[in-house]
Amino acid sequence: MIRNLFRREDARRRAIEALHIRINAAARVPALYLDLGVPDTVEGRFEALCLHVWLVLRHLRRLPAPAADVAQDLVNSVFAQLDSSLRELGVGDMGVAKRMKKLAQAFYGRAAAHDAALDAGDRPALAAALARNVLGRDEPAAAGGLAAYVAAADAALAGVGLDAMMAEGPLLPDPAAFAARAGA
Image 1: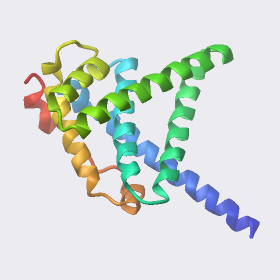
Image 2 (image 1 turned 180 degrees about the horizontal axis):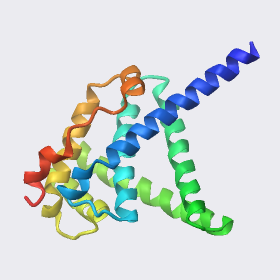
Image 3 (image 1 turned 90 degrees about the horizontal axis):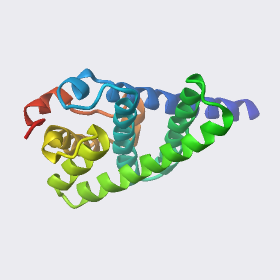
Image 4 (image 1 turned 60 degrees about the vertical axis):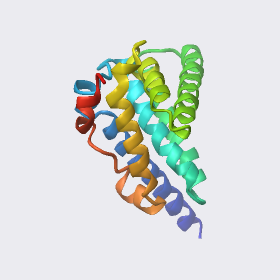
């Protein structure tokens, strides 16, 4: 019986890690950086990761149990990876705690801004939030393509159940398809 408990826990951990890996891959699609203007920097990659994690968490909130547990496990996995990355960069124990707090505040602040705009169907507000938060720019028009991508990704995720999400990962549109709108 204990052996089965450990197997289930190990299988759950592996499933969350696989989902996390797929989200990381989605956040590293070159078109995000080359076509949609996400800066190809440490900060830009953090923003792209946060954006994709937020999209998946947003979708998981809409699904029935055990989606909430999956969401919490995913958040734990993402922040454990960020903690590990900071340590690999040479940040000491005291510095890691401070930086992790700032990263969490940044993540949840961005999630709230993006949620509000997307929930309201306010594409200009979404573009403004994405320009400021992801692109690091004050020009909402620069995030037109990114806003279109985010709206399309949100719509695509709406049709994915938890089993499919866990088996295949988030099925997201190709960011390159939104390149023509990047400056619009």
